[in-house]
Length: 555
Image (cartoon, rainbow, N blue to C red; front, top):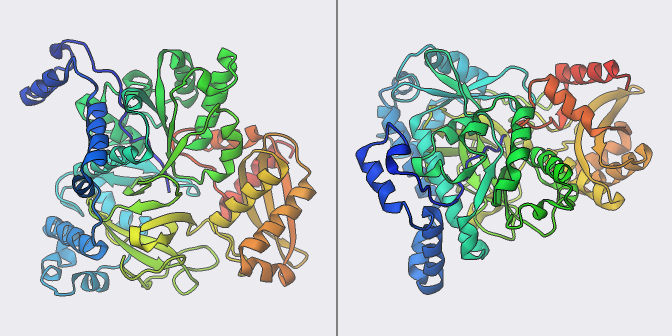
């Protein structure tokens, strides 16, 4: 599951003559730019009017944020997807035109089209898109591919990103901007700037397609008027070397008036620490006094919160997003919650697979060939599900790899609980990443210590089983105390763990490592910066690589 930089950032209107803004701008777009030149920032004006609407016209405000029927919205999306892809090779193989005549479309779709993971989808279909073939699983030619390896895979995955997908991501991003009006910020805040810490917009091109981080693809395809409203700007955004990019942002920091930041918590923490150190500040608010909003995703913020907030002079509003390489699935649309509303009417059809041993192999988290699937109106609150998505980039019944819980059925709001292959269950303990994150947060709070990174390995211990934790802290911590507290917290959080701890799990141990060990390992793996996250559970080859790396350091 990954967060990318997608929130357009308001800034001051560009004062250059229209003729200098770009050689390849259509006359109609030039005319629109002339209309905005010299006026207040476009985004700021729109949001100001939305604020006024909220205060003066409740009916119009309700139209802006309607409460849609989830099943009907999803039925419409599925029908649109099947209709558009009917003449593709995929659509012909599975006879989408016949499916569209069925009175029970979604049920017939689920019976006819098999479920796919990445390897199956790529080997059977997407590799043909890389070779330049058109109309494979989505109409036309796929021009962009998002490179993604998740948190556990070693080889980069090539995820197709169609023009339709770029437009749906942009549309959902605009919804996200409008959601800001619910947070009660002063109007002038929307005239400030936003800093997106994402991948390089300088994409790889092999003569047939472009490839890179989704953040680089979407930022490179922003509308023309967005170009003037975000930081760090085009030049720095193209930089591929992560350390160079961070250094250039640090140098430019005093020139900007940042109100919002967008990206992964761990890398923003590193950036803030460098800025504070460079300019001898107490907090980041000494240089960016208007900073109020943090849009984040891809990884739980809980382990980072305590140490991150030490870098601030005042609280931020946190907005979580669920923007994966495969699409923009959900976003937080209101304050005072950590849940995200599923995007049910914008290019994605969802199916939900109960996350249990009947549908997933408990050894490695792989999905069975014909899993049980449910639709949005059939799932229940507080039960764990994996997600299959069908999208306007040609993914069909595709296992995205995340697990979620529906926490508010009336609002279609979910939380991400982990990854299908990042849970820990070597003897039936069924620990999710959400359980682990909560235990780490509780440990940090009890010890008044920021625990910024961790990972866990399941081990054999005296003929039984054990859990070996590796944690990176702001300050020293007694490993035995940490192990005891983590163990006790997990017993409170997870009944299966508590049961297995009585018999099968004989050992829980902790090794404390310098934070730099985690960051250097990510760099060695080629996963430094942007949307990359340290895997929370290591098994198999990845566990061996981690242990070999620690051995090489003498740890």
